[in-house]
Figure 1 (spheres, rainbow, N blue to C red):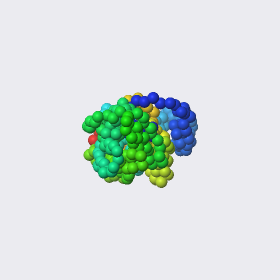
Figure 2 (figure 1 turned 30 degrees about the vertical axis):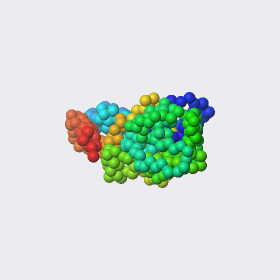
Figure 3 (figure 1 turned 135 degrees about the vertical axis):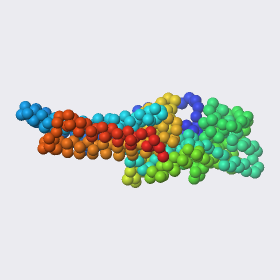
Length: 405
């Protein structure tokens, strides 16, 4: 059913109409990865360096040693900026991920951090909103008409939830959690798609007229409209109210130059997954920066796969979303999102500064050692000074307090 897990949630018998592997939305598209790998200039330079320079470096080093130029041999053999940069990158990565791992935050790969540092837009699926706020009943209107039998909308939803053996803390946005009604026996229940932005539910109670429930969006509100025959009976208006943590994170992200918006519809069509995928694709085309998606249900998988960074709020029970589609899992705390953005930016700056320091220092020290007089011990100390400074810079930039806002 295209309502999403926060609307209908429970157990039911289903008939498989299409194999999962045959659904185009869920097929993995690795063209973006291939394109990234093929255009990586840094990898090409590193590969060329590893093929040509080490043999030349080794030959010049031994030649200098045999001719008695020990200092020059040490300088030539110690010139390894690529090794130092790689060692610094690994150290920076381990430092960046260590604090997150201690707090249960999962980052799939350190390569996610440079991408996250360039994110300008974060799209939050409507199915994830129940983690960051509550749905409240704004109004419940029962019209005064001459219908033979009128039932309160909440009692109809309660009866449907009981009929489906659904969890009342989750079903229908969770608005039934603290309520209690007498369930009316249901004879039949049929869900259908009216149009691209509206769902309908036809419920037939035992010994009562047939009721038609229409679910649709009205701005930021969700409307449940009840009709009996062709006559309007009642209406229920539901609104999502964010909690303080969501408002705080939104403010923090805004100060970092990142916009956060919701996408998707609780009352979408059977093509809701395609609609969400198209929304993310359009955002990426219009944005000069990267786009991240915070998803929560199976319908979000195509959108998560399309995003530059895919984020999950927590590990789902089956692990289907969190383990297959997410680059980052926030360990059930949204406050980590803004902190991760700061951490990723610190990581990128630290890596760039360390690489610049190591390359420049290696070139200068090698050049000086060819003309200046250094003892072997002095050369060893000088060549290890830059990596030590890089480690200090990493610890300073990526300390636990550096990413706090």
